[in-house]
Length: 102
Image (cartoon, rainbow, N blue to C red; front, side, top):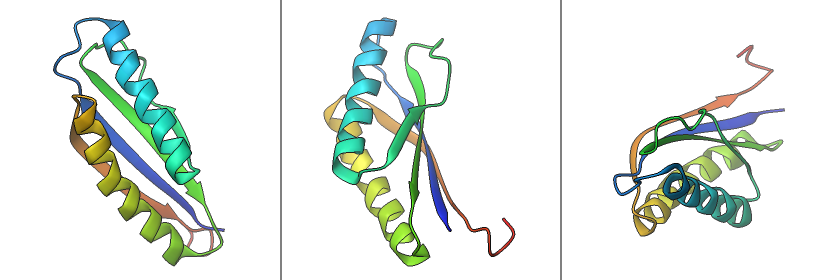
């Protein structure tokens, strides 16, 4: 069964404290979970106030569906991040498929 993985690196220029950072990260996680029914987790320790890394995963029996979901999430997160005052600095998508040995 294929598993889609998307890693997003964010910059939060206005964050002056861990509270500012947490507010942006929590809002993004909640919106992504609700909109796409995907697993979302913060991947870093949160030691740097103005940066964050999010991991998003989805599972489906269809690789084509997962590719479409990843593209949709990638496009949507840019808009969501901008409304929260954050910027996407990097993103990396991958589909792990046990049939292909990845």
